[in-house]
Image 1 (cartoon, rainbow, N blue to C red):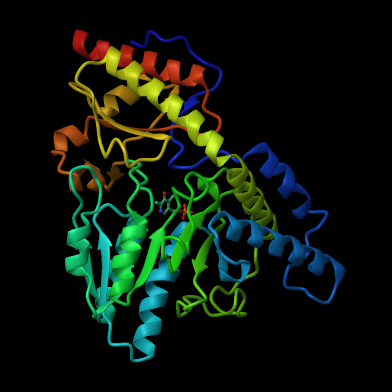
Image 2 (image 1 turned 120 degrees about the horizontal axis):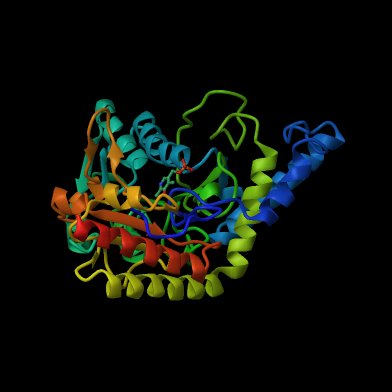
Length: 391
Ligand SMILES: *Cc1c(COP(=O)(O)O)cnc(C)c1O
């Protein structure tokens, strides 16, 4: 039984899965759907030129967010596509240009689209190396150092983990990668707009970003591709040669305008929002810890983004907790395969046994999370947990 009163709208603490569009983003996008619907590649007339100018302004905003130049930004459909272009594109370019480097190094806790892209390259003669993480979710730098050599083409390590929120030491990873002469790719889908990210300071050659993880629309993203020295990629799509040949296809001007607006909003408010989220996150953690003795936090408590808690509950499964809290949107991070719910491979990589992984929830706070939302979540989860003990 759920002791909590019903609510008009669910409390949304799943901001790592996706974020709502900021109303300012929606506003900025609207004219580009019908009034100004031109194809940004139709350079011969005014409607096309207007759309092109809007796309280029957005590209500049995306670049500014990560300290890049506009011409280093390739617009894509999202981080999944960006990761595929970065990893497969780098490998296929190397193979086509007699570069003998064949090793591709990544980490066990990466997003599936990185892990699968790297794994797919084994069939093309590459050597995938998937490194373990420490129990706190961080990559051990000595382990990386030992794995990266003159045969290494690419190192792909995510900036912020989408389940446990830990932040990897990108500057150190960038240095180790550069020393070996390899390319450094980072999946920055959970980092961009949330924490400062400068591609030059961190030695990043390739970085993937997603619009819908930073209060922009779904279906748009970017790949940063370093120009000096140039990170060389083979395109995955054949077509009209848009995006300097790297990503053929008509650019979705409305989505791109929204993505640019989202990047600008995120950059302008980042420091203040990080403070606000840290305080909400701490309120959530202390509330839960007081109400539910024995809960544990997964992932480093220091090297993590403000808006994430990944919590293992004693004595009740995540599924049962979620069932008891229908007005709370949280998630397990588990992958539902055909029949069984499998434990999260990220938590498994941290060394959590399957039964602990099954008692774990990801709580993701965001721009529209209020103190009242946090207090509701604490009360709802505490009540759900007490229900378990009584049962
Ligand atoms: C969401 C996410 C992706 C996939 O991004 P899409 O834009 O939805 O394709 C990739 N990596 C990480 C870390 C993510 O959080």
